[in-house]
Length: 317
Image (cartoon, rainbow, N blue to C red; front, side):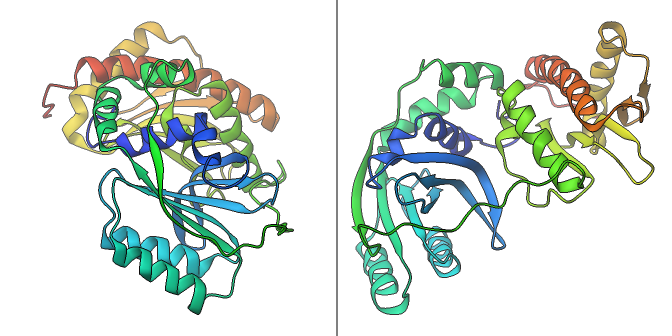
């Protein structure tokens, strides 16, 4: 649920992810989704995937308003920084000057195999997103996967196509890694988390730096985080709920009281601003991940239920 800021654009991207045909209809092929909010080339991309036939990377930029200068610059930078691919820019309307600028960029400035599609989102879809934005994330996810929502109506505004019809990319994605490395372990954990706890919407967001030993997720309130560490420099493995804003001390204290009553785990430590689950260093990395995700799932459900009960109260310590 959106508590301290709108998540409507992210919800739209989740809907597109679960309904790849909505993207496939514009790119002359079949879209295979890979990541949401991918960080690459010092930029965030709302969605990233591949067109199966050509193997071309697909970059999707979405906005819930009319195309504006900020997004125009971002799409332009995307085209400038990638070597090849398909770019979809989704907005509720476009200016002809943006079309002309992109046409000139691709035809006369760039010499790269890139197709651009400017796609219009029906402005009426805001109502559906407003409804979902007010609901708990478990309910949002269940409605999306069970198709208990209206799908967005998309239409092509303009296309600038440069890629030859028989072009096939030879580039490969490099977003994995060995479980013996911090990056590889973190990426595997994130994949398992998305598979096991798909209703935790923040799990679907790609992380900018998976090389870091700690992975941080928002927990539904600004200043309340989940922190995962599969192995620190002392070989400790832990998962914690962390308070970083004293404004929500009362909320945090209520969560702690409920956890003390309902969560039974011997290696659990309660502190003033952290609740920490520790895992034995005797466990191998796969068992650590499995045990941690089991606790993560239960804690997400518990914290969500408390946060959603309190979302109209102004907590001040």
